[in-house]
Image (cartoon, rainbow, N blue to C red; front, side, top):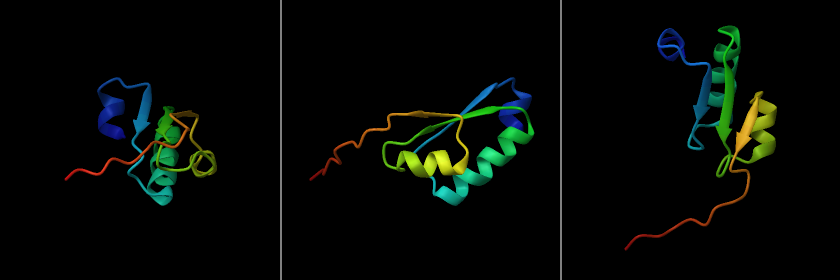
Length: 69
């Protein structure tokens, strides 16, 4: 967060591979720095992203998981 803040970011986007606890920690840190947070909630259910404190949510619909052979 701090590195992106110092580089001039005003929004942080988190991928859906993070746990709810990681998203909560990232949101808390970002908000402390005055940054907004959006979460790609395709695999992290959107209610959990809301619970974690995300400011916005992207891709709240489930995505089909591909299997590669």
